[in-house]
Image 1 (cartoon, one colour):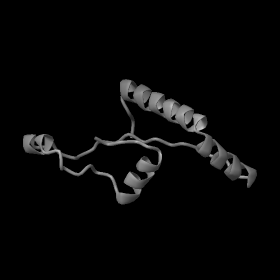
Image 2 (image 1 turned 90 degrees about the vertical axis):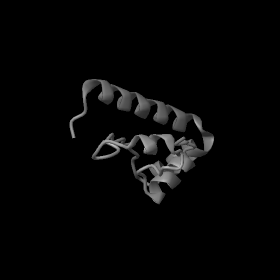
Image 3 (image 1 turned 45 degrees about the horizontal axis):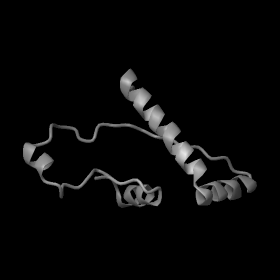
Image 4 (image 1 turned 60 degrees about the vertical axis):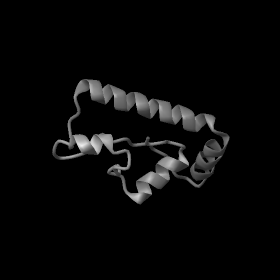
Length: 86
């Protein structure tokens, strides 16, 4: 999917910020070193995609309990990086 330039820039900037945050966290850095010591490389991939196919209803936007379109695995991964989705 081709992203508009402004969105591509934002995703790229987010990726850079995440890599910086992960590299500054001692535990994450140690885990990365352990993985690399076993002969594996690491790569962070971010993908931006539309959150819904059709327009959202106004009632969905007002309801804070509306679930985000992320799988349980996605939410677990984001939580492990201390990424909040609120």
